[in-house]
Length: 255
Length: 291
Image (cartoon, rainbow over the protein chains, first blue to last red):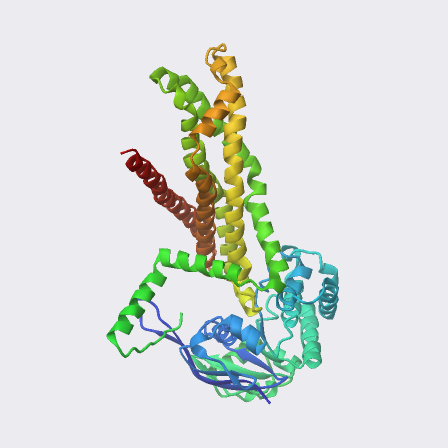
């Protein structure tokens, strides 16, 4: 079943006194349920903007987006509707935890807000389960500013999972993490994906993620999105921008 | 921002659309829209979410009101003492000793109390709120709220506006009371020390208090609630608007903070002027009745 369908999606910036900047030019993409897809590309190609459009944080110029077969009304496209109606959650690159709430309250926030009928005990149980699943239960009483990047990222994922999303959008989930933290985070993401059956769309520069999560890769370049490809097809790619990225990453035929 | 294209089929529709766009893009339009949204959020508050949102409002009242008490108390004592001392030493000389109560009512209760309290709260709480929200915007925390399906107007703006309005009324009453009561005793002590009981002997609590009560008009009892409520709304809406308008650039935060304070000052004075018309109208009505 198709979890996310994007058809002819365009996005232009209107800057005063300058011609419109085309960020996305008739982008098409179909993502099936439970699939993981990585959006890659060089910096400044609009990867994060693409993800923000999917989350409803930016309004596209034209095109169609369907979440789980339900087409979004793009004129009123906004993050609140996307989150509530289409069950889309977002993990920000900087984690974006609410700075004056402790880790526990950050994760509990969407549950308390959207399920006010639930008792404090029920909320506590669910939050504890989520924190344990991301191995951050020992930080439950910490404020975000006291935590490392790796822990913040895990808490942010726990908070996104508290929304029980059908689609999980992640912006550079492994940036700034050391090898051990990266491995551990990817293992947790993979585990959660199989447990919760969520579709994952992530923006990353970290091409080997596709290998580790058995994901497909799409490359965004000059407003165009390439067709999805598997990790082992990377070295066969003919496009120069993909080859450059592959070389920068230092991938070889025998990873 | 994405480019939007709208097509209209009639001139009146296009005129209305352009007028609406102009109004919504102007600062007063944006502020009033934000205020209206926060009031609608209160009016249509989901009862089941009342506990969460009430907690937010109480924490805002605590931050705006309770935590500001030492500052408000100090300024109120100083202002009360200053006003009473000046009035007691100067007014009898020009033959206006009997209007002492009226002067205190006009200066403390009607004008300086609400306005000075508003300035203090705009500088302290308004600036802090604008900086906090600006930082939330820069750190994508506001976006994070939206992607969790939580409306920032309901979660951040409504509690700030409701809490600001409630706290301002409380602070205003506290300020006027402290300025009048504590100011009296401090001024009495000061005058006794400095002027060898000559002027101080005229400062008798019963006379002082009854002259203030005589100076109060029914409109003052209305304005003691209305003015700070409006000022509280102005300060909170300004802080929220400028804080949330800061784009993803850390340099925007200090700009948002200073804009919030400056515009709050300006709008508070403007609102005070407009509200003063109520006194002029009341005076005119009394004058006409006399004729």
